[in-house]
Image 1: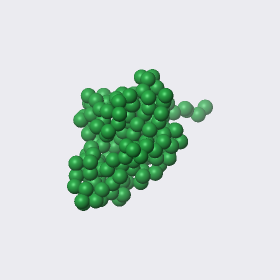
Image 2: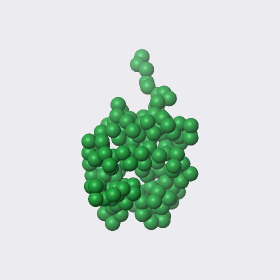
Image 3: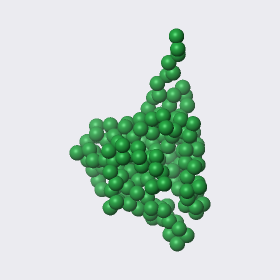
Image 4: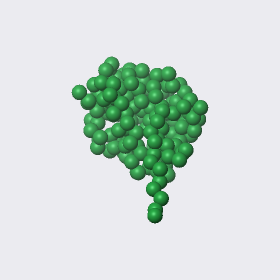
Length: 180
């Protein structure tokens, strides 16, 4: 009889796990280093790993199997708390990251579906997020889940990260999934 591996569990991260979750984010985002110049990549990665900085504003969610973190996402019940110019009434997600060794196996989708379910439960009008066009796998995932581009909420990395746009910039594209 073949052993069935344990199902992954999606849960809230504990504060004492944030360093491990931040390490997962660093590993998942490492390939983006070749897509962005150092003056953009370093502050972007630092911001993405600042889970403790958003602890009181959002929920850090993990998918875990056998004590190993496979992925993470940050969920904002109120997207205005993220500071990315979303109007009230929306929930938000950010920093979707999946461990490189298990990418392509549906863990990112599971985390997004958890956020969609949570946003629906709370009665949010929609679920909002920002990403970048070079994150093509993530963009395809969001589009398969029904998210639509929302160009009126696009931003630039210089605005979000507080860096000099004259050194070069990166457009941060917005997506919205309308829930009602």
